[in-house]
Each structure stands twice: as C-alpha cells, then as structure tokens.
Image (cartoon, rainbow, N blue to C red; front, side, top):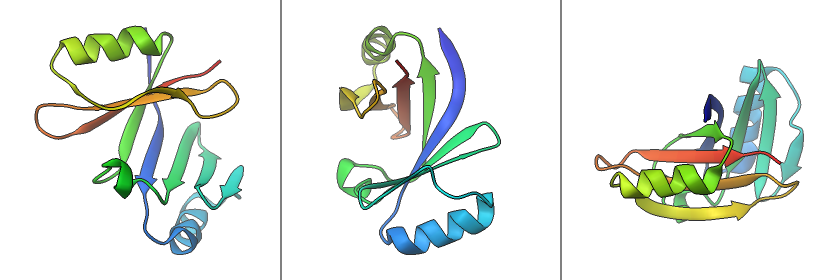
Length: 114
C-alpha cells in the first residue's frame, strides 16, 4: 500500500546556500545537519537536501512515496517499465529508500520506514 508523498529530496550543489534558503522557507531548524545530508520536518513533510544527488542521477527534486513494502513496490515499478536508479537500501534507523526512472525520465522515489 502507498501512504502518499511525504518526503521530497532536492539535489544541491552548495549545501550551505541551500540550507540557508530552506531554513528561511520552512522556518524550522534541520533535524539532520550533516555534510552528506540536511533534513527538515515541516508541516508533515520531510524535506531533504542531498549534496551528492546530482552524482546519483537526480536532475531535480525527487518525490518519495511512502510504502509499506518497498521491495514489492520496487519490483512492481520495474515490471511496469521503470528503470532502476537506486536499489532498496537502509539509510539509517531502519529507513529504506529506492528510486526508479519512468519512461519520460521522471524520478520516482520510494521510502519504507521501520
């Protein structure tokens, strides 16, 4: 089952500048503030800044759909013609993420929380 889009990750080139902009926009302090990722929780959304996103093939913001079985959803997307960009992996705290590209080049992310 899909619970909707609750996470969006932005690829950024200058994490300090991006952090300043998103802090001003969201008006909250980040819950995660590391050189490899800055994350915010605001208005029920998780907003992330990934300075390595471009190197991972991200061409713009990626919406992440929250699912209860990431491996089953990923398999279904691949069977439906999606191209694997990132296989399911644990990014900490039991949170699993994966991503695919659709036929039009749009990126689709998946998240499963522990």
